[in-house]
Image (cartoon, rainbow, N blue to C red):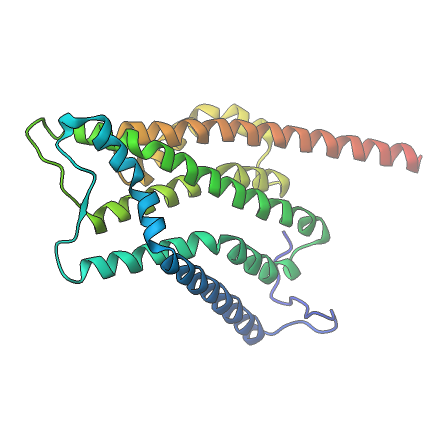
Length: 267
């Protein structure tokens, strides 16, 4: 990738100075933060509905398993914890809602430093990143009740389940963020192949190491630490790794075909 500090301004006439780069970076960060603030405000408006949605897996488990000694309620252990949890939910929700805008601001900052070929791939990468992040978050939420069932079952039959709202919300948010980030693996792998950092052949040859690394990453970033969540993250990440390698092969074949067609035309 042709990274350079002499990134051209909009009219392409003069290179930007380092101070201009920093000024533009500040502007992009400010816009991203504003989008997060607006998203957080939206979550605050619909806070009760959002909280009801987030606690649904816990209530489902308590209803389905009366032996777990829980009623599906969350508790605030201090006068400030309820407000703090509300703001935490708004913050996490604002970040998730703002992902497309953040990606767009990132794209606007780095696009002038990219070649025309690299810019051609940028928008598909941004769109696929957002879709994969949402898909990962959905898988995390789908896995949550199964993870809670495993964790509660191991706490003992005589243990009453009383969850703090702050800790429960943090668990849900970190699960969503961890799964969303994990599902971005194919984007990174495809990008590395397109820029020539690695080849599909190398990735296929080192697939055992890649699978081991995937499982290690899944074990590290899974906040609940239970095997169900780890497998729910590691298995899709492995499949997405394979898909990324296949995409790399297809891109490589297309590149070779285009090169051959060019040679035939030139001759």
